Image 1 (tube, helix red, strand yellow):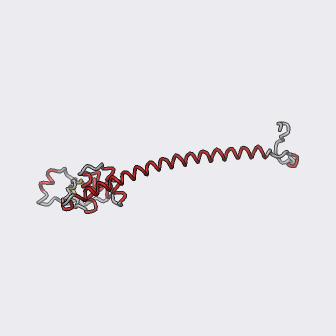
Image 2 (cartoon, helix red, strand yellow):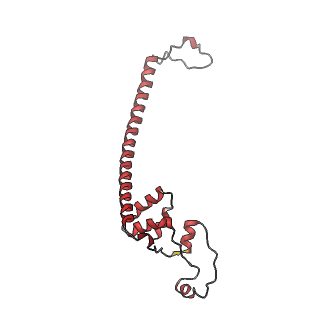
Length: 166
């Protein structure tokens, strides 16, 4: 097809005189495009599946090691009755985690020693030991990595941010 053969398309052009587009060439371009696109998507899917498979294996190993550690902890007699000492949490830390601020109260007579040791405006909030979280605190005390304990807490539907205050 020559440049002279191509007329400007406009209102005065007779469309029946314009030669048709070469369908074989157009079909070859479309087929090449589709083939290249499918190849790229297949490679992406393959690499993604391999990475997910490796990650799944790591998670299975981590879960197995956590089960072993839980079994070891459960085999220690009398461990259920050991009180877990929770760290003292400041009011602004509790507000950051829960979004709720406690009203400021005047210090009571028995809290006079505590209020003198702490700066004004910051009151210590003592958390009551929760039986759901005791085994996780014990796991951290026995040397289990905190990230592994947090993963276990997430798998059981608990808030892992509680361990950050340890």
